[in-house]
Amino acid sequence: MKKSLFFLVVTILTGCASIALKPVDFAWPIESVLETNKNGNIAENRYSFSINVKPLFFEETNDSLHINKKTVRIIRDIKGYYYFVAPGFKNVYIFNVDNGEMILYNKILVSELGVDLPAFNQRKPYIELLEGEKHLYYLTPDGIKGKD
Amino acid sequence: MKKVLILIFLTTFIFGSSVLAQSDYRVTQEFKSRQRSFEIAIEYAKSLSELEKIKREILEFKSEYRGSKKLLDRALYPNTFQSSFKSLEKKIAYTTKKLNEITTLHQHVSKLESDYAEVTKQLSQLTKEVLILRKSNSRLMTQLKAFKNNYGGSKQKLDSLNNLIKELKQGISQRDTLIKEIMDNIFVDKTKRIENLDSKELKGLKGQIQNTSLIENIRSLVDDNVKFLQTNLLKPEDFKDLRNEFNDFDSRWEHFGPKLFEIYARDESQKNKLTEIDSLIKGWDASLNTAVWNSINELFKTHQIDLDNFSTGDEFEKACISFINKEINTNDKNRKIAREQTYLFFAERVWNEQIKKDWLPLLLENKMITKYQVKNIDSKISEWKTKIGDSKSFLIYGIIVLLAILIIGSLIFLNKRNKNKIEKITYLDTDEDENITEENDNDKIDLDE
Image 1 (tube, rainbow over the protein chains, first blue to last red):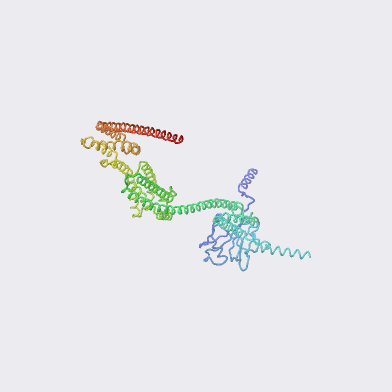
Image 2 (image 1 turned 60 degrees about the vertical axis):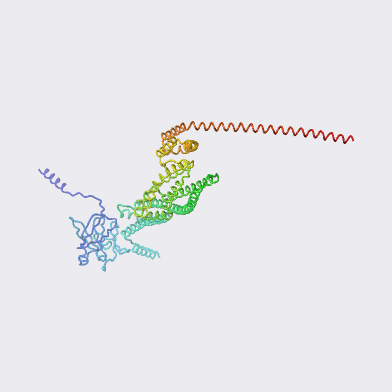
């Protein structure tokens, strides 16, 4: 009886265990530079996704009305986190995908005055943030490299 | 010292790295932008040398971005660094081919332009020559008409007339050849349909037709040929040449006439001229046959034989038979010799010696008369001969006998005259001999004394 019970528990536990596929590289080779429409939507044809960024602008600027034709720069790191920035932003926003939504994972302050010409570079395992041609930081989903 | 150097190195590295940092996105965009610029430059390249220059620039561009190959291979997806340059190479190859074709076409166009200029020059020259020949032919035609009205039967005058006809025939033929050359030159591309010509080409064609007075020249060509035929002084060999001339021109007109009609489809005045020429050409064909019959009639007239008018083989046969019947049925004994003379002129001088010998091949060849009709005339002439045969033979025998008597008489007379002369000479010789003997004897006596 004890033996039978043991096997039943082992079988149930084995059946419920998730399968993990490794290693995974979600990294985009280069950032995508996208422009919002009047509704605040952006679309990336290469990776076939579209998203509404109105809440992002509202979070950064407290303005969700003047949203048309804003440039948004997005890059995905090796772990699959999405990094968002736009000209004038003080922060870089890091999102994770969860159940059909992008959920803010982290918000990193990169400039008190805001970055005028931000750009991302894929530098595995980091994401490099530039201001024009000037290197600013290497970023991870958890913050700035060296400042953790 | 070492510490200082390390500090400088680190500062430079950190500073340098911060200065040299470049956005991958920007690198990719710049690469794409320059690639696109090259594509446009290739597309708009106007010469092979320009294309060579672009090729060199592309090589520089390639080596410049070779360091970013790894990035570009991923960023340019689905393209790669190499495939981007392959695409440029393909475009260069295509444009090179296109430029080569353009160069060939350009050469072709240049040749056509120079050919056109040459043709225009030739046309101008030909037009001038045609004008000169037209004047000369017109003068010759006037001379011929004047000559025809006055000419008698002297050999010198006949020779002059023949020379005049020959000269005019040559002049007309030369002028016709020139006009045909003009037509050929104007419609150089004979395969091209008029409806497919654009307005510029059509305008150019009309200009050439106008500058060469082509329509007027064709009209005068046809007109002059008809007038020449109407002189009724032509020989069978002339008709052969004139028939060939007509056939040659007619076949050209069949080709060029519709083109000219098409060109002037909306020009009523020119269209009327062309319609006139068309009917003149039909008239020219008919004139050829009429002129042959007129020339034959002229032969009879020169021997004081008046036949009824004829302009076909049937009419000619009827006219001959009717004339012979009239002659056979005339029993005027006072005109016996005249009737025999008429027979001689009709049957021998005209029918046998001239018509059958010179004209019949032409008439038969052009189906203007049938062998059956010739046979009918021949048998009618035989009947005529039989009818006047006896009297004619009497006359001939009489003439022969008279001639024989005359010859014999002459011979006898000459013989007698010669005999008398010989006798006279013999008598004179004897007298002289006697005188000489006497003189010799006297001389002898004188010497003895």
